[in-house]
Amino acid sequence: MRAHLGAALVGVLGLAGVAQAADYPSGPITMIIPFSAGGSTDVIGRLLGERLSAALKQPVVVENRGGAGGNIGAAMVAKAAPDGQTMLFGTTGVFSMNEALYSNPGYAIGKDLLPVVYTASISNVLIVNNNLPVKTAQDLLKLVKDHPGKYTFASSGAGSSTHMSGELFKSMGGVDIMHVPYRGSGQALVDLMGGQVDMIFDNAPSSVPLVKTGKVRALAVTSQGRLAALPDTPSINESVLPGYESLSWTGIAVPAGTPAAVVQRLNTEFNNILRQPEVQAKLAELGAQATGGSQADFERHIAGERAKWSKIIVEAKIPKQ
Image (cartoon, rainbow, N blue to C red):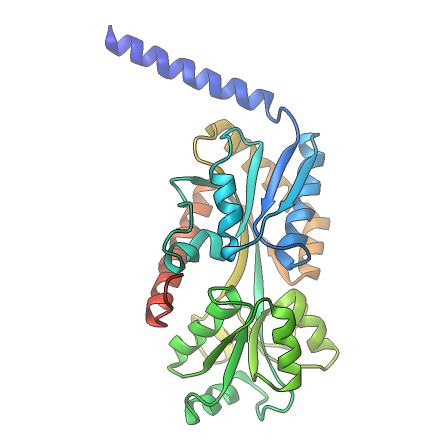
């Protein structure tokens, strides 16, 4: 009798999940972006949010809840009702770095937040001050090897993709370059152009315009292949450090306990959006690439990135915050 009751209960819960998915969404959806407005994450999140609203025929309200490297916004979503009405538009740091960078980020991927879909990858660009005596990434690697500790690389903050791209370059190249963290990339780029720092591995959306106007010099990109926006700029992987790849990427997550049917519905809708030619074209303009895939694909991607960056964080002796 217990076995029959258990099976019946599973059946009822399964039907409840299907019914909830059929009624989904029941009202406006909130998309939490755990960073301030105006950055590449915000621009991409709002673009996809608009398309999701059209697909689901419900408003998608974007809320920027920045702070603590994305932890504040991510923790808010982790505590939200598990009904698919609140979702996180997270990044590399939120999904794969912060558990190694913070003693208590306030959430755990897989336990408190369920990955839904990998949405886009954004390359960084290794750019240098125009007066630095290098023309290629090979020149730069030789220069910093010959003068350990003399040269500096800026970042938009400790633990950011711009920081970790530099740490990966240092680790794979066996070089010593001093890290100078900023509170955002804006002032870092100003100081790079002014010569206060020597280089930065900056997000493509903000670095490409500076390269095209001649304000800085691009040596390489951090993706494995070249960018359409900078076709003459080689990748670090092809030019100097085989196997190098450092991407700032984005994805969707929902609170743990969200019905599987709702998660699958969201995965399907986002994949449909990411296949739209106009969405792919807009992302390309930003130096990004649409990704997509199954929920399992995203979980595997997160696991691989977490292992990679945790190792780099330990090697770089970055203290936990």
